[in-house]
Structure formats: C-alpha cells, structure tokens
Image (cartoon, rainbow, N blue to C red; front, side, top):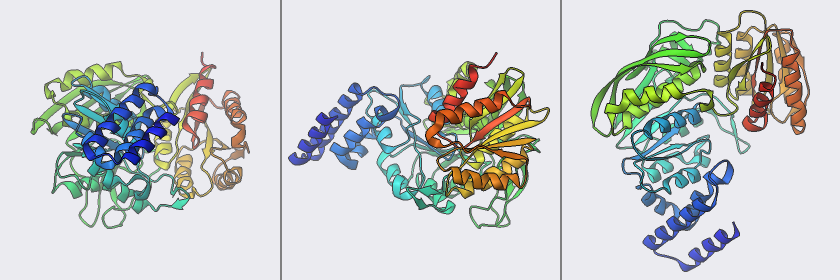
Length: 491
C-alpha cells in the first residue's frame, strides 16, 4: 500500500480545495476498493481509511449523501452482526444497498459509502466508549435516517487499558442517536437500557419499539438485579424473557414502553421454530403507520436470535420504500435461513455421537446466559459444563458468568482459560469450586491448538450426554475452529 501513502502525501502538500479534495478522495477510495479484495481484515476498512486520510471528515459529510434514501446504523452489545446481516437481506430485496458487518468501524462505514447507485447503506458500528468511537460525531458525519439498538449489557470494562464504567458505556451508546432530528430510532422495549434511550428521543423524532409478548418465561435462567437507567433504583419485573429483557417498571415512573412490533407466538421443534410477529410500525419513506402480521418459520437458534430477527424485521418495516412487499419478503428470507446466518463462533447445538453438545462464544454475561437458556431447553439429564474464563481485570464479566453457570445446574464444571491469563483463570476456578464440583485445566493461550484439542477430548470423553461449552475466547481463532473440529466427529 506504499503507493497510496505516497498519494496521500502529495494531496496534503497540494492543499486542494474542498470540491477537488472530495473528488480526489472519492476516486482514490474507489480505486482502493477495486484493488483490495473485500473480505476479512483491511478489505472492509482500507478504502474508507484512504478516503478519510485524503478527504477529511468534511468530505465524509458529502459522501454520506450517496444513498438516495439514507443510511441505517446498527449498534448494541450483542447481536449487531446477525441483525445487520438480516436487515441487509431484507432490504436488498426491495432496493440496491451497500452494507458492512463484522468490521464495525468508521473506516468500514466509509468504505460502504464508496458505492454507486444505492438507495440504502446498512452499517454495523461498535461503541465501547466516547473517546475511541466518538458516536455523536459519527452521527453528525453520516446523518443516518435510522439508528438501531439491539441491546446494552455489561461487557469488557477495560478499553485500551482504561476502566470504562457501565454508565459511561451506556451514555456512549446513547450518543449515537442524540444529534438526530429526523428519521427513526429502533429500540428493544424489553431491554430497559435501550428503551430508556428511546423514551428520551420520543419528543424529537419517531421511535419504533420491538419486544416479546409471551405469557411464559424461562424459570431456569439467572435473574440479575437490574438498575433503572433513569434513577438507579432496582427495577421490578413481572416477566423476564432473557437476562435483563422482560416486562419491567420502576418507582420513578419509568416502565417498559409498548412495543410497536411484537413476537406474540412461539412454537418450538428441535430443528425449527414457528413464530408470529405482529404490530403497527411507522414507515419513514411513506410517513405512514404500516400494519404487519406474519407467521414465519425460523431455524432453532435461540431466543437471543429471535430478538435479532424481530429487530431486523422492525427495522425493515420502518425503512423499506416498498412496504407492500413486507410479508412476501420476510417470508422469502426466513424460509431460506439456516445457522450460517450466525457469525462463525456463535452458539450452536450439535449431535455428536450419543451426546448433545451446545458450543459457542459467550463473551459477556448476557451472551453466556442466552447460551445457557437455549441449551437448558434440551437438557433432560446431567449436564457437563466446559467453561472458558475471562481475563485479568474482567471480574465484572465473571460475576455475570457465575450466575449463569450456577443457574445451569451442571453436574461438573471443567474450567479452561478463555483468554490470555492462566492465573486469572485459576482464581475464577477457585470461586466456581466453592459453589460447584469443578476441575481446572491450565492451558496457555499460546498453545491454542492444544487448548482446543483438550476441549474436544473433554467433550468426547465426557460421562454426560449433555455438554455445554461456552465462555470467553477469540471468535475465529478459538470458537470457529472448535466448532469446525467438533463437526468432524458428528455422525
């Protein structure tokens, strides 16, 4: 890429005017996009990086006008990638789009905007803190017609080695939609944190909420104490669907908003689920309320991904310029879905010999709890739990994890380091051993192949017919490879 560095230097020395600088940046970015294979790594970010280096943020404001209808930005703690994929699959049936997922940076968004003849841009954006993600500035630069929130839960509290308290983390997420004066914000009504973001925006712009409307709740899952995002008091729940998502209220008057789009029926089979989605959603392009009623079939991919699907359908119905296609498009896409829609390291249940194995990443408390909840729907006998730990300085994640591990009620826990520190893993193991029967395997990060091999060996030689494998660890290097290796042992 030395040629591009040389070009950037020349442009800076020339001191080009705004219009010429924009055109030069755009041509250079598109050239880079054609030369760099778009895929994992720099393919998704380098063309955008080059554009911004040559053109600056002022040029990005002009580039952001490329989509004829506008851009949609998806954020949250979990589910961003799957939700962005689903929104893209739905919208591209109605109009030309550009999208990015699994590379959630401003450079990647800019790369997506370096496209011709598009109505929509659909972009995933990751936010850990204000300093590194500058979310309000991103909103001003990209001027999205929609900001979509999946959920907000505790995750890595250290950002670049600096502690990032949860209230600051939530504020950073909220800032992504704060500058919006037009468009629609999409929020999870069942998640009090994203719902609070929506309630604050209702006076300024439209907010479409989505949520479950089911009578039953899972009695096996951990039920954490959840603070009101407005006053800090403990929320009261009448129903909990998954982790902190449910029907809630607070003494300060804050309560779950009524969802515009609801999941009202759910029937489960081993390899397929049948759901009903219904509601009335404000559509941005027509400026009308659009009634929706859908009965659809989905893969058996857990409540976690039902939320992602519900969010995607709500977003699609909110922004499609062909609302008459909603029913046919949603049914077409959901009929074609399989587990490949999920990122490679995400949770999956597999039959391996006489065992039923649930395996996948659970990097934070919300994700692990969802994996436990999903697996426990199938457990009919004693359960073995292979738990991969957080790292040094991730005690908050472990605290959330511990609730879920105990709630799974495993007969035995096998503790393996998930990240770098074996010492931290050993300390977490000692706490688990105070509550459950547990063994520890001090497998170092640098011997990842050996770590994966030992986990596979523990599964295959487990005395239990039900085995759950989840926790922390790199998505591709550990979880995707583990799943791939385990599938070689399937019947």
